[in-house]
Length: 156
Image 1 (cartoon, rainbow, N blue to C red):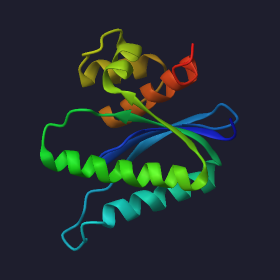
Image 2 (image 1 turned 180 degrees about the vertical axis):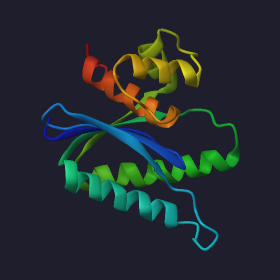
Image 3 (image 1 turned 90 degrees about the horizontal axis):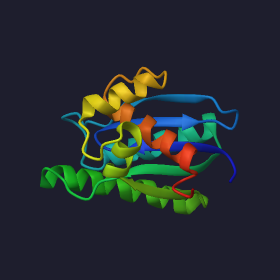
Image 4 (image 1 turned 135 degrees about the horizontal axis):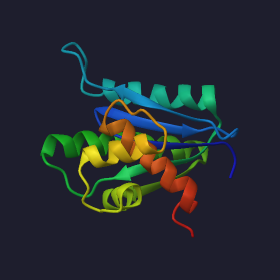
C-alpha cells in the first residue's frame, strides 16, 4: 500500500485522523455546515476540495477508512451522509485509492470493548491512547484509524 492512511467520520462535522508514511498521527474536525447563502451542493464541493488539499499536504493518500452508518436518526442526516459518501467514493475511485467502510459497532467494540458504547466512552478510550479529541467526531476518526492500523483493515 502506498501513502498515508486517512480515517473519516463523515458528516456535517467531519472527524478525521491521518497516519503519515512516517507513522505520525494527526487528527481534527472540519465543519461543512452551509451558510444561508450556500447552495445545496456547496458542502460537498468544500469536502472534495478538503480531500484534495489533504492528499497534497500529507499524501499521497494510500487508503481511506470511513465510518459506515447503516441506520440514521433522520432523513436529512441520511441524505447528507449519502452525499458525502458519494463524493468520497468517487474521489477515491478517480485516484485509484482503496477505501473501506467500517461498521459503527466494530469501531466501538474495538475502542471500548462494547459494541454499543456511548460517545463519551469512545472519547475516553482515545484519550487513554494519548490523543486529545475535541469531540466525538474526532474520537471516532481516531478509533477508526487505530482499528485500521492494528487489524490491517480487518485482516488479522
